[in-house]
Image (cartoon, rainbow, N blue to C red; front, side, top):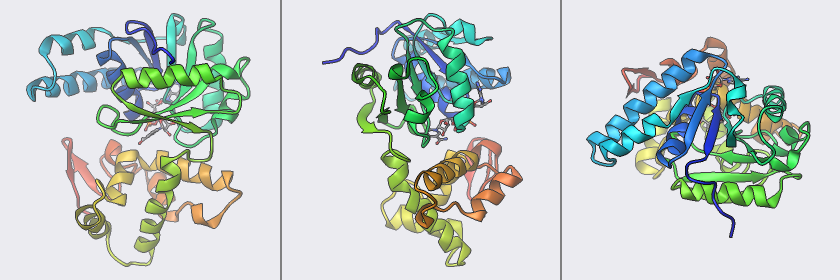
Length: 297
Ligand code: NAI
């Protein structure tokens, strides 16, 4: 059986938004030294402040000891330049959902990290094969796809591209297990497992909205309270972020040669145009304030 990465080895997380901060928290709690980077240094500051708050809440609720939380905080470090990832055993990329940006980032990382470092992408939908294709050593690139919010969601999809080394995927699978997650191996197909199966959940809800069947709050309530889903489609899209969800929809749509089943919605596009990206900007289908969801369409 594959071994997980050493507990105290270095994990670099590139991109400190919703996903990067959650991944950093989970890796630090699991015992790794974590280095966080973002092209916007204020995003790293915000991520670390958010993690400190999240750890304090866990202590308050009795789910974590104060000493354990302090140790996790001490393991978190802001990176000023990518060069500081040079001692990483694993780099997890969680930047914007754009193939060119991800390829450019991994090309830079190849020039920084050591030969045994594993490169992982948290992409929701872009082909891991395509991200790896421009690398000198595509066999060490693997998808490590977490779900939002990372500290709460157990599933991790470990995605192998055509060139991914099986041992690399196995190490990442074992590492995700050691972090308390529930990993599953999958091949690099458009949307992987969850985002593929979830596409109609969003797409049909958006069609219902365009057909004026009901408003988002009603559709959400029906799916949540009567349908047994943890979240309704509109509140879930607000949580994911409309920029991210729109990119994922486009990427699956393009990958399936424009199959109309996967067509993006103009509603999503207009929310992105308006900058109403969901919870992270305080407004999407709903308005939000002070960390509390206030559903008002
Ligand atoms: P986000 O918008 O919250 O954060 C992205 C961060 O990356 C921003 O802080 C941005 O400044 C930074 N960034 C952009 N380009 C960069 C670069 N070249 N180098 C370093 N930092 C850079 O986005 P989020 O939601 O955290 O998504 C990140 C990735 O995770 C995307 O690939 C997305 O598809 C994936 N993902 C998102 C999920 C979600 O529910 N939001 C779920 C699972 C995966």
